[in-house]
Each structure stands twice: as C-alpha cells, then as structure tokens.
Image 1 (cartoon, one colour):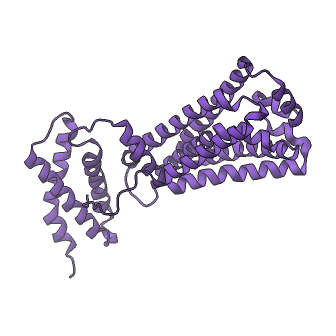
Image 2: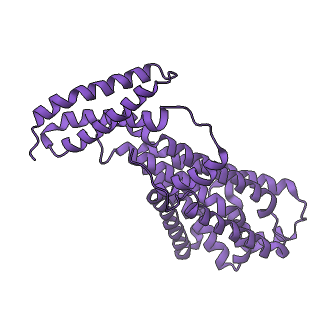
Length: 337
C-alpha cells in the first residue's frame, strides 16, 4: 500500500494538535489530576502519534514534520512515564533491590568503557614504572607523598603501630575518602564536556593505582597491599566506575546520536537513570568509607586473611547484586507503552 503523505498529514494533524493541546494543559497545571476519560484519550493520542511517527520516518522528504513528531512523542512519553499520573512514593527497598541494579545493567556499555579505561591506565602506570622506576615521584600526587616511601619500610612501620592509633589512621582514611569522592563526582560532571575529561580522569587515576600496585608487588608486599586495599576498594573502585558510567551517559546525551530531540528533551529521558546511578555510587562510597576507617587502616598481620576474606566476599556480593537483582521474572509480561 502506497501512502499519500500529504493526505496522511492533513488527516492526522488534528490528532497531533489535540495531543499538543493536552500537553500544554498538563504542563501549565502540573498539580491538576486529569479525569479518567481525558487520561484515556491522552494515552490513545500518544499511541496514535507514535505510530504516525514510525510511518513518516520512511519518507526522507518529511524531515521537518518528523522532527516535530519526535519532540511531541518525547514530551508525551515524559509525561506518561515520569511526571504524569499519581506520584508514587519512594520505596527505598524497592529502589535498592530493583531500580538501581536494573538501571546499572541498562547502561552496562558505559560502565564497561569506564572500567576498561581505568585499568588501561593502571597497566600504563605499571609499565611506566617498570621501564623507569625513578619516575615514580612524577605519578604520585602531593597529597599522597607518603607513597613515595619504599613499600617495605612503610609496611614495617605500619605493622609496628599500636592497634589503637586512631588519629593518624583516620586522618589518612579521611584524606583517601575525600579524594575518591572528588574523583567520582568529577568523572560524572565532566560528561557535560562530551566525556573527554571523563576518560582522562579515569585513565589518570588508573595510572596511580597501577604505579602503587607495581611498587608494592615488586617489593614483596602484595599481601599487605591486598589486605589494605581490597576491603574498601571492593566498593570504592566500583563507585568511581559508576561515576564514570554516569559521565559517559551524559556525554552520549550531549552528542545526541540517533535522535533529533532537543538537548533538554534528551536529558529528560535520562534524568531518572542519572539520579539512580549517582545515588548508588554515593551508597557505595559511604560503605567504603566505613570499612576503610574501621578495618582497612589496621595493619596487624594476624588480620590480613580476615581482611582479604571480607573484601573478597564484598566484591563477589556486589557483582552478584548488580548482575542478578531487579530482573523480571520470565513468566511476567509487559504491555507496550
């Protein structure tokens, strides 16, 4: 069947205008609850307009009308799925058990890029130190100047300290927490610069980790390093990766690949996912900070197996949680929007 485009547009425009008018009414009166018949009509118009958009996309000569319909459908979608209807109360358990892990998996490619960039940086840092050990000081930031010390000397000093030496350990822990919180936030917000500095920050911080790992392992302090970093790092590093994930989601939205929607409309689509990723990263950082303060900074060799065990259990649990939680049961069906 050949579609007469002009007749099709003339016939359907009445429905598009009616949908646009309902949207204006709802946007001008956000607290108004529409009656049932109006809500049903709105849903019908949304479905009809979406169908019209699919038909028009096959005609390259109707780009202007297609862009108009894309914006109209995006606004209607946002109203139906985000702003419209009765407000659903926030349920923390449901958010934690379903929303966060499902959102994380929906943007798994961005997470993989974030994680991969970090570990490529780590490999670069380790390789650079292997080639020229004297360049170690060039990679260590001023606030972490103690890492320039020979690892075996630091380990010897730490293992001799009294177990109740709170002040120095907690000051160092707070310094690390502050640094990693800044890194997580920066990797996210630099997504507004089209993701360029998100990649740079991930690579740079990976380089620092690579230098530290190479330095301690080659000095025979791998057990100390694992017991020191794994308990809190099992949550802290994933939080940084999720910050990078959110930054890359923002970057993709800035580019607007595959859509003619305006920037504001594109961000309306990902707003909920961004808030969820930010909230999840914040929770991981809070828990990592607690573990770092009360476990990671105690370096009694008798505790090393326990510390490594706690870190391994946490990391395994986090992987299973993000991979499996929030999945729909196979027997459940969903109706099309």
